Length: 453
Ligand code: HEM
Image (cartoon, rainbow, N blue to C red; front, side, top):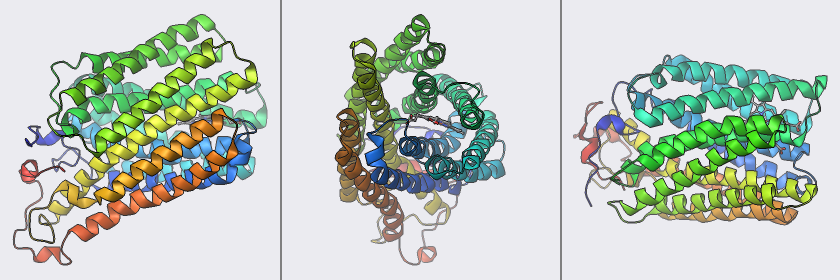
């Protein structure tokens, strides 16, 4: 199989000067793995409340474990690595990156704990820490993301970080409103906040980043990347009017935004199909993750369309919309887990090489694919797909059992995927790696001569 002909700077784990120390993205990723485990426990113990109402404190708790402790932590971590690579400029400050990681972990656990048990000041505290953290993170990322290089993905990332700022600003207002009761927090208002976060922040980041990652990870050389540009543009333009329409109950503005969002998401699926068709490597684990992840996106779009056009009563509509939100979270969750099987080994690999470890313990050159167990990774795929499907089906049919079982599966999957990366990296290299005579200097570019699977 042909080796990637990509500039070293395009590699997520590259050792060029622009990327932060590896412990920054790896720290975020580890925290996201622990957060994913928290999602499982929260879902497991809150399943019976979940089916009572999506606005029950147990459901709001799980929703923020998913959105903050798992997805936002993972995606923000990836951006701290990826932003400098695509923008070809370093972060403004490594110290602030470390504080952003700490702040995100604190927010991701404090806010849900406040929702679950109170006291109410815990929700307010989590909200203040969350907004401060995101503001610091956005300032830090603005260094690389304000660069003129990087094209459509960098523009998409700039806007997605702006959407994150808008989402948490809404969030803090809603959080204080719980005590002050300035306005009734109607479902449509919460949906505006939810879609700003899921589509504007997480979705737009993923769609933008995948335009750079897929050509590299799938070894794909597409004749045109127009569908990717339409995907980024459609989502970036559509989410704001969609959310404003929901907020002010204006159907015309909501539909205006929805049309752009649908165009963007369909273009994203075209972009995936085109990347897979023009791939130069055989189908493997990441493709499987991408296919099931895209199926959840389709399911989310269909559920959203039924809720909007299906002429269903209010209680059924709320259930369908909750299932739609669950399906979109599953789309992103599977994408994050799938890509982590490329990104984490890339970063670990460059960290090992910087320490002079460039051989497997058997003596042959170290490969990215040595850094985790592939069979276990396939098990993670099966476990996470079953778990996410259980949540969507359980929500749709008001059944707590599939949701509780999904919670258990998520706990197992989260522990498995996190340990697979830690144990995989440790067991691949010799016990005393520095004794290796072929020690290589940090910054070496021969990373490109290594196989990536
Ligand atoms: C500092 C950050 C945030 C704060 C303070 C916050 C606060 C809130 C509040 C107060 C609610 C309404 C809860 C209630 O019914 O009383 C809510 C709902 C929601 N938020 Fe956030 N949020 C934040 C970040 C996010 C992010 C980044 C996302 C998505 C990526 C998100 C997704 C959601 C969802 C999906 C719901 C609906 C949950 C449900 O009804 O079950 N939030 N948020």
